[in-house]
Length: 297
Image (cartoon, rainbow, N blue to C red):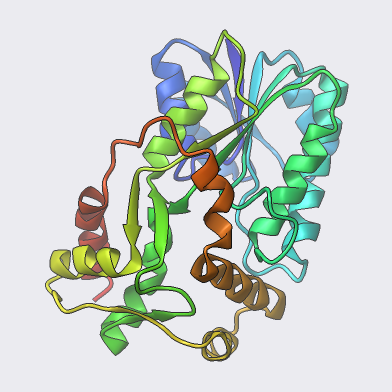
């Protein structure tokens, strides 16, 4: 199959590309960074260098593809709201898909995407799904992963300087956590699926409360008493503002964390859980976390 992978060689797209080329598929990886070309080619794929905001480039790259993996690169420094940013990228994809005649698309969305408000950054995924859903005749699967393990890296400085994790969610709040490797595996399965494709697919590697996560990470880094405390949203917003996080991003993050703490973000996930859990459990990721934590010392 001829398959297009977006996301350059990020946490998901790199292992996805490796899996697909290893299975003999003809893969083109879209990247905005010319320096990635040799790395892409080293994986047995073709590099298409250009911007996701260039509709003509995306359309040309998509033309002739049997399947396309579409994702929206994270952008925490934009002045746009998540809805504006995700919708703009999804609009570009939609135009290119229509004009190029693509028939099969796998879109990276998120758990919580069915909700129409109150989810912060994830509201962007909701609108991205809706834009692609409007394309007639398209066989489309939305991949809805849980919270990425790699999000936990953002807490290394907090742990080092305060000895704890403190956000407006935590404690006994249950969160589905997921490895990029397991997401890549699910995306690969859907891209090459020959039977009827699911409209949505949740992906999770492990389900743990925040207290359990703190215990596992604390043990791995030699801080067995590590705690994950719940603090007021106003305090979290003040911390984000002090760090210079753009106002729209800070507001979206606080709202997202509130939706985790209330449990609303998990409602649809609980109704449509993954058929099976991924392979990479929290204890496995904790070893990677410990290595990163040590290097940041």
